Amino acid sequence: MRIRAQLITLETLIRKEISRVTRIWVQTIVPPVITMSLYFLVFGNVIGRRIGQMEGFDYMQYIAPGLIMMSVIQNAYGNVVSSFFGAKFQKHLEEMLVAPMPTWSIILGHVAGGVFRGLMVGSVVTVIALFFTGIQIHNIWITVSIVILTAVVFSMAGLINAIFARKFDDISIIPAFVLAPLTYLGGVFYSITLLPEFAQKLSLMNPILYMVNAFRYGMLGVSDIAVGRAYAIILIFILVLFGACTVLINKGIGIRE
Image 1 (cartoon, rainbow, N blue to C red):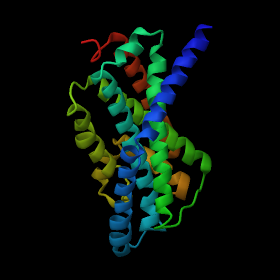
Image 2 (cartoon, helix red, strand yellow):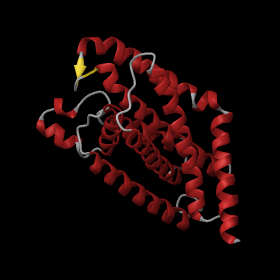
Image 3 (cartoon, rainbow, N blue to C red):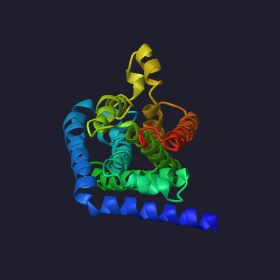
Image 4 (cartoon, rainbow, N blue to C red):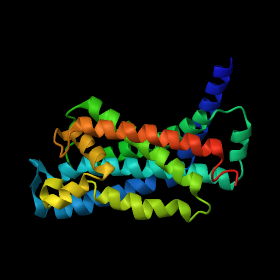
């Protein structure tokens, strides 16, 4: 009976998070889609003509998986950090903390919202990509699993950011100064084989590189890194971030202070 009650709380929170995304779709879905369309237009259509092919594919086709993954990462992260911090700011997070709602339910409920928004935007961006280039799927299982696991990683990362955030400015610092640089340097627009050797080794320290390349392998069949290593790194991040979220919420850090 207790497990059933906990599952009901989880289902309720998931419904709330999904409803939040769909209710304000003009803010959650449309802006990132417009931004990605501009990327396709400028980087792919205009600049791509001068670059030619990369790894045997047209440049537009090569960067399409990276742009789709970038939209998933940014929106999964942004949805959770804004939702959880909003709950803190509006003081209704306390209702979840005093209710018979386990910590894992609070985490998974918010993560589900982030994954939903990330996949929604990623799907729309994929449709937009069809107007600029051909989309192919080399391995559907790798493509789907990588994009979902990546959305989970950055949803949890967004949750940690929201836990420590004390004001609205704090939820924009990490996306602007950490997430954006790592994404742009994560192989979205290029293959790391074009870089000098020291830069290639430095790039291997960027976790987003593994996610982008694994997703590109799922779509195009080409990758700068081993796909198995990408899965291992993503799963490690999920376990570490879930553990961190659990400890922080249980201790009330950034919540009960």
